Image 1: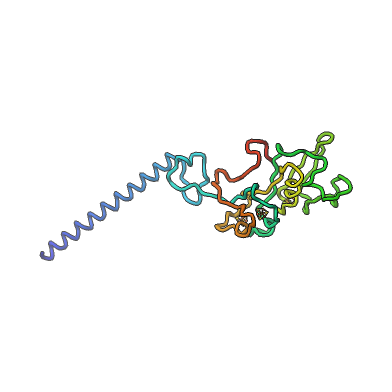
Image 2: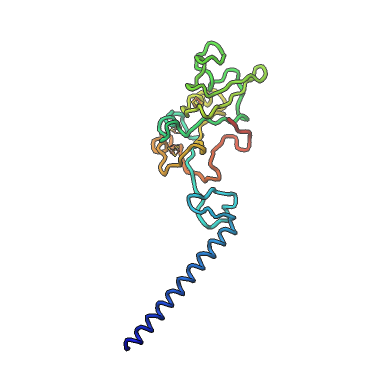
Length: 213
Ligand code: SF4
Ligand code: SF4
Ligand code: SF4
C-alpha cells in the first residue's frame, strides 16, 4: 500500500467514525424527546420533582427523601438536637381528625399542672408552640405553630402515652436539606428514619383525614 492509498483509507475510517457519532447524537436526542413527551418533563436527575406522571417516565428512578415513621418513633428527643440545622427540620404534626380535643391535654399541659390554663408555667412545650383554643364545653382545639417547634417530642410523648396519639413528628420538607446521610437517622435509636419516594414524602397518621398544624 503506497502513501496515497494509506491516506485514502484513513480518510474513510474518519468519515465512518463521524457518521457513527452523528447517529449516536440523533439517538440521544430522540430518547430525550421521548422522555419529555412521555413524562411531560425535562427535569431529569436530582432536579426531578417526582411529578404525577413519573410512573410513565423512564428518565430516572424517582428521587427519595428522608422521613420518620411515627409508628416506630419512641420520642427519645434526639430529633431536636441531631439535625444538621440549628433548628431541626423535624417538627410536630397534628392530625386533628384523631384528636380527642381534650380539656386536659397531656400533650399540652405539664404533668401535675394545678390549673388548666394557658399560663406559660402550665405548658409542657418549651417554646410555647402549641396554641389552645376553646371550642365548646368541654372541648378544646390544639394547633402547632411550626416556626416555633423544635421537634423535642415532649408533646408527642404525652399525647401518645395518655391521649389518642394525634400529635407526632415528621421531617418538614420545606426545611429539610435532604442530606445524603441524615445525621438523625444515623443516631435514631428506634431506626425510625427511612427513604421514601418524594411523591409520598410524609407518613401521616389517619391518611385521607384532615391534617393540619
Ligand atoms: S431520634 Fe428517632 S426515636 Fe428519637 S424522636 Fe427522632 S424519630 Fe423518634
Ligand atoms: S413540645 Fe416540642 S415537639 Fe411539641 S410542639 Fe413543642 S417544641 Fe414541638
Ligand atoms: S436530612 Fe439533614 S436536614 Fe433533613 S432531618 Fe436529616 S439531618 Fe436534618
